[in-house]
Length: 332
Image (cartoon, rainbow, N blue to C red; front, side, top):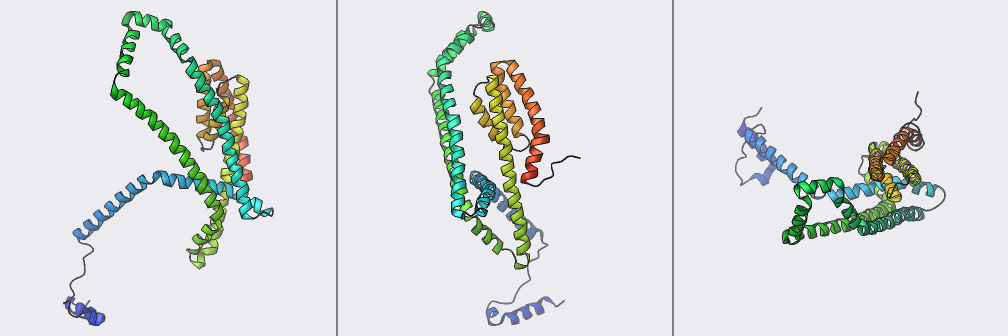
């Protein structure tokens, strides 16, 4: 290798007039120096922490985008099916989107009246529930020995005159109201983004494919289209299974007389969209509600869900996924 001065002179001659007047070039940075490694390592750590903090701040936004994109992939196969039948993409998107809005409207119409009715009924029956609890034998016996009722009444009156407690309760109520408003706003945002993604999906895919080298573009396009189709069909299959679970659960709860059947059926359907554990969570909620109406109802509901989930796991789900995602459902 050339000596340092000779290398500097060679580089200076290569730069020409730009290097004149700035002195002789020095030694290049030693990338194996502990200072160099430590500086850039610390800089990388700071950038990683900053990026993680930014992602944390944008968690809600990213979640909304992912949900909207997932809905888009689920609805796009239906849009393409309508396009194959002769409709334009605009009309197909409009028809599918109106269907989606209709589903949301039906869910709201099913959930809202029972919730309002049961809330009003609970408010009317609350004094009777309190009186029943106060007259229960175990509480009367406990009050005779420890004066529990008097202490509870004294503590309750003290809380009512405590400004900090009232502020905390009021803040909790306002926080719940803000949470409801935020949930409604996020749902509307998801619906609007889903409509935008459905309309502009071909342009988005073309722009993404344009960034791929031409030699790999055909293969990337084919793989991406197949993955998007499989994801969309999987979502359709999962929705079908969850809807069937919700309908059958509603019929079962209506026959047994389990309260809040419509609301619980919607909850079971929504939780059924969660893979692996969603159906179990929905069944557990139904059994817990049924238990307060009677342990026998809870036992019957648990037996029903035990049998139904075996049928769903080994008969319904494999056949649905075989038709939608082309996953073999036969067991040998």
